[in-house]
Image 1 (cartoon, helix red, strand yellow):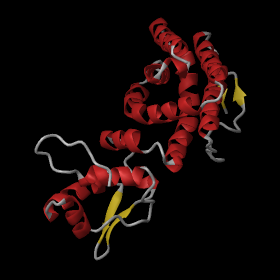
Image 2 (image 1 turned 90 degrees about the vertical axis):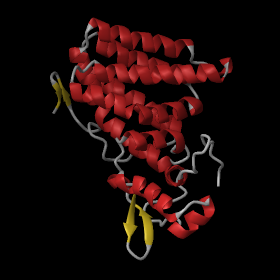
Image 3 (image 1 turned 135 degrees about the horizontal axis):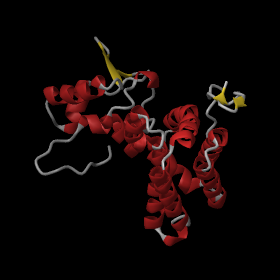
Length: 257
């Protein structure tokens, strides 16, 4: 068991420990996590404390209690993936788990081309400045040889770039969703930026997306967003599958059919 830094007089968190084990892939959907008695012994805490922590995982749909058997990890589709606690766990612990990464990537591939298309139709001058400033920050901190701080800043600006596009839709749902999705977007961006073999090409794909939005070309924005995410998939070595929306759509002057 990995040691966790605890605040003074704070008991060990069973929920945090199990979240790390589940998100990292140690326990897969359908697997049973250790029983209450074993967790009591492992963490030297009483049964009511263990049950309280298990309840946190039950409430967000990650595990289910099976009478007489224990607690079982639920399918990914049952997880409340937009809950702030869950997205926090995802950011901290899901990096080694390609299945979770693939689920996030598939969602982004389904959604973000449409978000980019909407941004190309609705972005204001202020939105374009925010997108451009984020893009410039990416370029200034693109090369990892400047150290870990440069890597962190590059990823931060990359996230800001995509969040600014969500906000440029001027749709309150998409704008709010960008805040909720930020941790999961950051997870993929951080991993892909580390493993990218051609950061200049990635930056160019982002530039093309920015230009498509700036010049009010919705169809090009759609395709450019797909290209950016295809680069992310390639850097991560992931194949998102055949169910990606828009992958076979015919684009008209007004958008996808």
